[in-house]
Image (cartoon, rainbow, N blue to C red; front, side, top):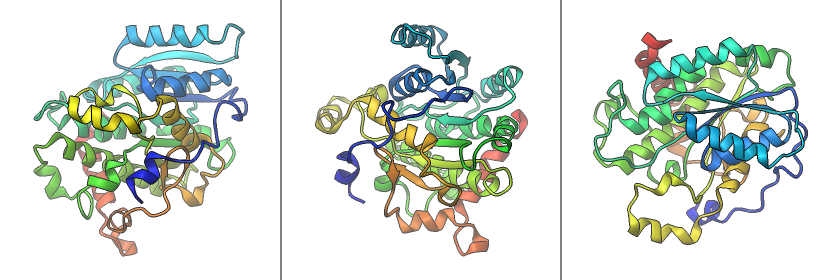
Length: 324
């Protein structure tokens, strides 16, 4: 699918205008106080949901929460709660999951939305992993795994396929993900180019979405999908350089449209058990033609694929085991 097809998508079909009440539902939006996450938190709160706004900065979260509440002078019935977490440090990820579990028995949708883009070459997480891989894949893997009891509890008493994990990817999955996907050799020898590492980490999001779905959808009913939110005016471009920023600015959309992509992935009835593990594109529709080499990588070896998504899941599991 061409870049322009995703850069100039049709109008969104699920927005705050036609989203039904979300009263009684509990959500987590990581990176929920800035950019796409802010707009998603705003929409969900406006429809009466209890939204855990997860991220590193308590001050930024408090400011965002106050701003959202001011936009709804009359009570929506919803709640906004800050949940402190830094996905570059697995210890804080485990701590955040425990803090949530002390407050809630159920979680209806987890949006793994937090992200960074093109940090200085060689940037590492607290545990020594490539920073982008840690924030986009390893940290969210641990968070999602630790929250499975709450997701399963919600799925047991919710309509089919309505309890989900959503993993935010990027158009670079189409354009720059390594041929054949993420191999174990590649993980041991990541490229020095931060943009290539970004593409790898975002493919990791899709790999993990597909594997969480494969392992959970039939047994517990939890559906997982990946989503490219779109080309958006957010802080994600701040480290890319002035020239690139000038080149992409004509095709960037307001961050709110990215929230519509993620809203569709998390709440649209078109996301069924049968479509679980799939890839959503702007502003909420199924990718019509994902790369064949990546589809083969997502397929387990027992089903005739290369099994690289399964291998990546297991690799993340091994790297986070001491925090689980």
